Length: 521
Image 1 (spheres, rainbow, N blue to C red):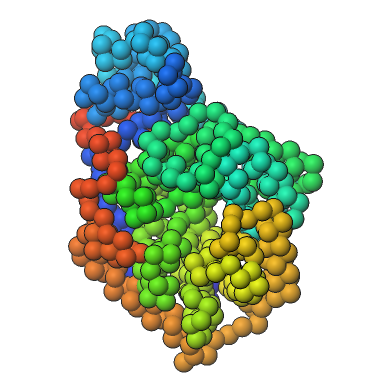
Image 2 (cartoon, rainbow, N blue to C red):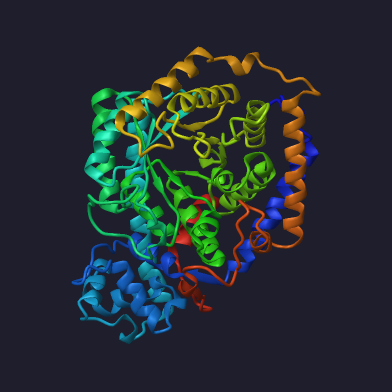
């Protein structure tokens, strides 16, 4: 990609080197640790699902029983493999017996370690093959039906009713009016739950609970619409919080196409322990990457807690770090939707030029990524006419800078949770601007000493300074100092710290080895 901004290639390379060092240090700090959520994800991959007689999810039951006895450091796969050998039962049946109080995993006779590893690795291999086969069928369906052409941004639309069956109605309306990706917002603060609710849900607050059953209901509805209308519509959800790896597994099983998966969001905005989040994001992204799910990073959130003009360098620094952490987890660039947002106050003089500079900068820094561009929300005040005008400028920047995925703005932003017709109006605005300014990007050049190029180069230079400082110290130190979103979190504090587990020297997670072997090949 030719730089319209005249960016310094050596400076960009130095940013990437610093981000690589930052990600490596974070990986080294967490290399000897696992979490209860990682081990629950292992259980789900091995076919464990359902609840016990008290309604507790069986993955939680298994992991908590082993964790309470101080034995989780070996990995849940070790204990399930040993139980398969001792009982001859399948992992799902073993979980049922543990939930019913009929079986204690840690009290069973211990088989030879090599036999345990071979036994459970076979189950793990078959589990991956089943999901991979389903993913191959989905890819074939997507190829057969087709979707938005590659040069046109994918249009991403949020639903948030609280009732999964009502979400289906909204999703079909989104599809009918030209949306490409339907994203179901989770119920408020679900990311703080250290378990995944079970079954379909019809009551949520600010969104719908993410459950495997809800994923399946939405996927089936969109597939039905896609087949009937000859255009594939994608499904997205959120992979963050205390259950990041479990959401990734459920998304892989149920055929989601995109998942919001940010390395820092849970730390900054849900006060989840930094180490816990860094461990969980690594395994969850490994799963997302392996099964072809596009991840959306969440740098737009910084612009909700700090001024968008001042925070621009932190956004870029975080983009570099988020990107490298994803690459270290095996996610290819084509599946990393780097985040950005149009959030400068509408009264800032030349704010539109600053927004254009930031969007163009992100696009040029990550040419192989489907950049995810978020709409203006923070400064929307209920004046739907002004909101529609600002959204139109946002849409213009989107098409003029070649963003990969765009979340639409809606006229009622800042008033209430949008109804179907508000989303339709937002979609109409997007289609109008995208078509009316279709080839604008090819017609635009920027003055070498103009506002846009100067702003972009200044932001990059400051982002580089931040990255070098972080690399010289630590990502965890930077988070404590409030580098991102003006939010400070300490490595020894935050929710979920009790779920961090030191690895036994013989720790075993068959899925990491299987996924790494394939990505290396």
